[in-house]
Amino acid sequence: MRGHGSLLGTYVDGDSLLHRAPLWSKGLGVLLLSTGVLFANRPAVTGAALALVTVGYLVGARLSPIHLWRPLAPVWPMLVILAGYQLIVNGPAAALLLVGNIGTCLLAARLLTLTTEGQRLLDGLVSLAVPFRRLGADPERFGLTLALMTRSVPYLVGSVADVRDAARARGLERNPRALVIPVVIGAVAYAHQTGEALAARGLGEAGPSAAAGASED
Image (cartoon, rainbow, N blue to C red; front, side, top):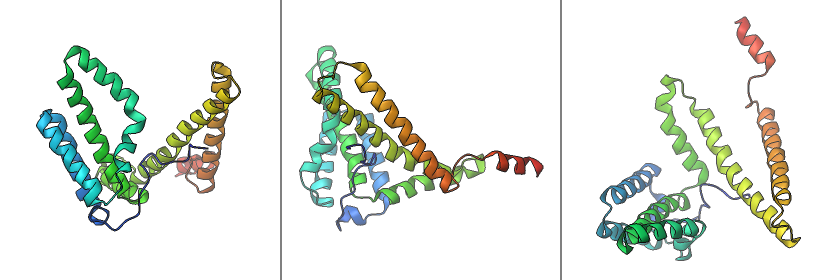
């Protein structure tokens, strides 16, 4: 099944400059580059940012050129629709600028995940929630939620793709029941298995006994 990928992207092992760079520096770089491109919204800035990201892939991270176009492959239909709308409303310059801005942001974010282990990236995100502990935030639960999301969303997306391919092979691609029912059953089963795994580790919701103990205290 194709649904076992990672929402954060597949880490590529390496010993490049970007692989060794601290997570905070890479995150800050992605944030500054993305916000700068979007706020400036100028062809020169977008072109310079895109060139910088390309150098980051090929030189800073020593990745193959295939990693440059792969992040954009799933979003090409959306980019084409947005570009077509901008082309009709605002002209070709605006269409190219929009696609360039989105592409630059996606490539920059993808470069971060390609050069950072998934667990290290999750730990970094969890650390951002630590200062909010005084406001009632639970960094550990936040980290668990992120971990579940990064595994569950790709699994479910892959499940939909697998069911669609199976229905097409049987000539049932136009039958809604052949598409919806297997996906729903698979999603329920996956959720049940995830819940059992969490309960086995004591990470589920507080049960009646725990609630009773808390009320007695």
